[in-house]
Image (tube, rainbow over all chains, first blue to last red):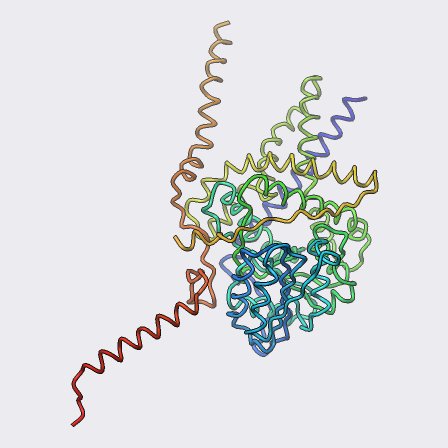
Length: 426
Length: 83
């Protein structure tokens, strides 16, 4: 009886791993095939120039906020159609004071100060506060450690010519890559995730994900949805599904690029990924039934949506499958189970790098014209093992929180140091 | 007995060799990176992103004014070409 149950668990886990593996093969092949053709066809209209509000949520970001606000003044989009709102979210440092200097010189920049009573409740709450001030037809957002292209607004908003587009996502590029091994591995993850994964999902008409930064949405849609769900730790993934369930879609614009500062140590990596995992799992619990019932999603969007929603459960599942598999070997189980063990290493390797497989990352790096960063791919095995621990811990935390009915939205902010452009200066 | 011993020896040699082959290139690249570095994000087609360090406008203006002053001095030393 126990052996039969273990076999069922092992078979189920292996089948899912193979499904994810096939999915990523399809993504990689799709991007390779499309690469020589029009990479990212979005509707273009030279006369389309909507009003744009840019939200910049910042909490204790004194080391990076000036750089970002300075960059806002250098954007090529007509300034009379721009509104930049820096949201000082109850900062305890000089973030607010630094931001206050900009509206004195630039009329299109505003600063919203939130005190300890109203602020500090997470990014979604800060964004909702900023949204109340926003007047633009389109709302874009950037995290404080980001540094966008000067013409990024033009590139992002052109997708909104199509009225079915509800949100748009650009591409973050790690600029402190050379700092250490962690930043290099995060770079590999980003390459796989954006250059191949997001682009393939866009090309194949699946569900590209709005990432909460280097992107934007129609203000009217978010107002109709009642703003960001403040109970969600990953309000961006939540918004992605809300948009699709409302009958709109998300477009990925790969040439709208923005530098970002990656986490530079394993502790910060843990905190960030733990928050992402918990948030993603929250969204999974919230939206899985809605995706299944939705009449606005077609079959392939439903399949991709479900795989996307459950992706952070995969490391937990590989752990369960390993325990089940070892137990079955000890118990001298059937030949079928022994044969399936062949899939295990491949499956392990196929979800490394924040769920981008090694071949996806390699192809992404190749398409980016990188020459040697691919050599680091084997090191992602350690990042994968770390992710197994992170996702398992996050899953257990979420279960405990649900049982004890505790808040699931403790916000763990990523610390930014602002020396991310070291590579560029070298 | 002998075949078992040979198998153990092979495993002892093969396992570290496999690990070495797998991770050696990564360690080499980590120690002495030869990759071109992060993508240079571009504005439009021609402009590349290595203007990334924040432009210090005051410094630039100082430079401009000193250059103008130097040029003015040089010009004042030149003989008048007007007839």
